[in-house]
Every structure is written in C-alpha cells, then in structure tokens.
Image (tube, rainbow, N blue to C red; front, side):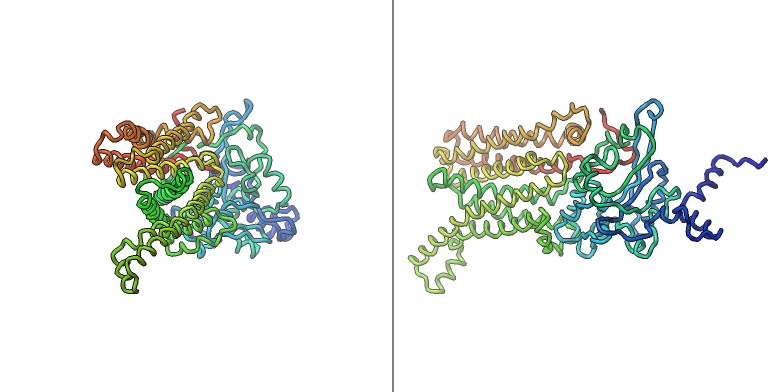
Amino acid sequence: MGIKLPLIQEYLQKQQDLRAVTRFAALHDEGSVCAPNGVYEAQIPLSAPGPGQQYAFRVDLDACTGCKACVVGCNRLNGLDGDEAWRAVGTLHGGGGRANRGMQQTITTACHHCLDPGCMKGCPVGAYEKDPKTGIVRHLDDQCIGCQYCTLTCPYEVPQYNERLGIVRKCDMCTDRLGAGEAPACVQSCPNGAIAITLVDVPDVRAKAETGALVPGAPESRLTAPTTIYHTKREGEAATLPADYYAYTPADPHLPLVVLLVLSQLSVGVFVLETLLGLLLGGATLPGAPIALLVGALSGMLGLMAAPLHLGRPLYAFRAFIGFRTSWMSREAVFLGLYGGLALAAAGLPLALDVPLAVELAGKVGLDRPGLDQLARDLEGIGRMLVPASALLGTVAVVCSAMLYVVTGRRFWGGWTTHSRFFGTALLLGSAVLACAAIFAAPKGLEAGSAKLAFGLLIGATLFKLGAESTIIQHQDDTERGELWRSAELITGPLFNMSTVRTTAGVLGGIALPGLLLVSGDSAGPTALRGLAVASLGLCLVGEFLERVLFFMAVAPLRMPGGFGKVSRA
C-alpha cells in the first residue's frame, strides 16, 4: 500500500497533468506523436478558419479555478505595464436548487472578438481592424489618439487605457502566436485547460446573439455579437449572479468633455433661440442680440479648445474625422468644427468695422464714411444670413453629441434621456445668455415682450430639465437592481451632495431669480437688474456643469461579471 500524500500535494501532483501541452508531451515521449484522442486540438484548431468561420475563445467554467494564471501569462508575454490587464477574472455565485444554492463559479474573460465590434465602430480614427480571415479584432496603437471612446462603446470594458502611453490597448488573441501554430499566452498559461481557441460559424453566433447574454449578468449579446463560448455542466447556472452585481462606484467625470458639451450647447442654444425668436417676432431681435451671439460663438470655440485635453495624444486630434462613416465621435468633431467657424463668422462680421484697426484699414483703402457705413450694413446682412445656417449646423452637432453616448447601450444614457439633457442645456443656457444681454443692452427692456419671453423660456427650460433629471430617482424601487437602479443609488448616495448643489443652483438661477426679475420689472434700478441677470446666468452655468458631471459619474457601466466589491446599502 502506497504512502498517501497530503491533500494539497495530491492536488498539485494531479495538476501537472491537466494542461493539453503536458499531455501532448507525454504522448510524444511514449511515441504516440499523432495524439489520436485530440489532446493537441484541445488548445488550438489544427486548421485555419474557413469561409463563414472565425477564431473564438472557448471557456470551460467548470475547469476555471480563478487562479489568474491566464492574467499573469497575458501580462508577461505581451509586455504590459504592472497595472495593465487584457484578461480579467470574475465570479458568479448563487444558483438554483438545494444542491447548488451555494454554487460559485469563476469566469475568465478577455476580448470577445465580436462580429460587430463596438470598439471598431466607435473609434473616430480607424484604430481598430477586424481580420477578414481570422475574425480577430486588432488595435492599431500607432493610429490611436487616446480619446478612450472605445472604452464606452465596448459593452465588456475590454479596451484598456494606458496613461503612460496615452493610448488604448487590448487583447489580439496573440495573433502572431496563432499564426505560428502556437497557443495564445492565456491558453498556454491555464493549468486546468479551461481556455482554448476554437472555430465558430458566423451565422450560428449571430443567431445565438439574439437570445441572451454570454453569462448571467453580462450585457446582452445583441449589442455586438460576441464570439466567446462559455459552457458548464453545473445545474442552476442560469440563476447565478455576478459577485459585484450590487456594487456601484462613481465613474470618471471626464471634465474636458463636460466643458466641451456644456459650452458648445450654450453656443448652439444662443443661435437657435435668436433664429426662432427672430421668426416669432417678425424679424425683430432682442436688445443686445449681437453681444449674445458673440458670447455664444466664443463659448463654442472655448469648448472646442477644451476637447483635446481629454486625449492621450492631443497632437493627433486632427485625425478625428477619419471614422466619419461609422463613428458618432467623428461626426461630432466635424460638425462642431464647422459650426464653430461659421458661428464665429456670423457673430463677428457685424462687429468687424467697430474695431479701430478695421476702421483705419478701411480708410487706407480709400473708403469714406458713407462707404464705410455701407460696408458695415453689408457685413451685418451677411452675418444675419449666417445665423440660421449656424443654428442648423449646431443642431446637427448636438444630435451627434447625444448619439455618441446613446449608441453605447447604457440605459442611463438612453435616447430620450440624453437628447433631452443636451437640448435642454442648449435651451436653458441660450435663453439665460440672451436675457442677460438684453438687460445690459437696455435695462428698461423688460417692458418689451421679447425680453420677457427670454426669461419665460429660461424658467420653462429649467422646469423641464429638473423634472426630466428627477425621474431617475424612481428607479430606487426597481426589483431587478439593474443599471438604472445603480445610477439612482449613486445619485442619492455618493453623489448626493453634488446632486443637491446642482438642483439648488438650477432652482435659484433658472426659476427664482428670473421670476424675481419679471415680478420686479422696472421698479428695480438698472444696477440691480444687471446684478440679478448676471447672478442668474452664473448659477445656471454652475448647475449645468454639475449636471453634466453627474451625467458621466452616475452612469452604470456595462461589463462582464467582476469580483467581490463594495456592496450597496440595499
């Protein structure tokens, strides 16, 4: 009778024979070179993908122990930074039935090399490509500008931003190793053979993508049609939940994007409202409209200048138009750029000859005073024609800005929610700027119906925006504890103070002070009226900046199941 080994040593000894490469080496030593039982094929296919096929990961959930050897192997072989990982390990627990009530499964996950990659469609610079023969989705590091938009359009949080390099990087299934007949690093590192490369039929993947998710708690497969195959023989797997299902953490505020969105929408709001009010009032304009248009145009340009601060490689921002056919970010960059130039021309032309230098130059070319006045009228006419064109172009740009987030599939950034927020900001801040300009141009202008209309629009826009934003709170009672529940928990929990300040600033700046101005009318002096108007505009700006920060920080990310994290107070 042999000596019984300690349990841990017994398991370690058995583990040495679990890897496919180990079994193949043993068969080779025995002379069984052909490996008749398919041991070698357990890791990678012996043939390249045929028509209608592509490579995919196959994961045996029952064999995965969560040891993270695949994570280490991937990190070392690909030369990643210490805090960088292209493969992650998550946990499912729960299960149905008495036998599986305490079931726990670990899940290893990397890029799913989707049939319709969200990262590739969203990238504004064409830094992704899907190999037509293998189906592998590769990232082109040299092309990347570090905008990180692919980290939002990928529902699985696969692309990882490397702050040191200023670019995003991701798993490419060790394509060079596969091309040489070698298994990828994660596959070869797994001591239990839980990961393998297989061939999948594209039609089958598309059909399966319409029926659910890869694993419980993962995003719906219909978003990108992922190809990874997860399988288990354990009962009750469908009743499990990710270990971090009830966890929530505020997301990145993306401050440069906050500045871009708020200031660009303020700008568009001024031009759109000036155009609409002009039509409504039969061609008349609010007092101070030229100054309001100039403020709007300059705000739009300031927002555009802030946008590159979000890039890891801002010197390559000019590439942003490359993905115009598929990327809403490219479309946003193009239309905002065109709008910014046209708006600046529309606002600047009527004021051009009021600048002393312009007058001096006009005199040098022989223009007398009547000629100078005629030129000024001509420029003003051209500027007026450019205002509605700018308004139209700006509206398209705001739609592109909204769609940029809608297509990510996050419910907090749904179509109605995002469009109402963005256009609500344009209407609110645009009316605040026009009203403030009217007060400065003619303090007695409150007697005019057009000035009162601007303040009325400001109050209406504020009521609309605050009402729309408050609807998220109702999801605290959701029984499914999904994305919107997490967002509601964030707003009423870690982000409660910010949310309170945002609401207070909105009520004071968009309702209370404009209401006081309308009620007081001409009884208040010019200085008081101007002070109240500036305070109203300032508070509205503070409120909208905080709203946009909350827009980013309160979103619940789509992701694969993660590890045990901070559990909510549910």
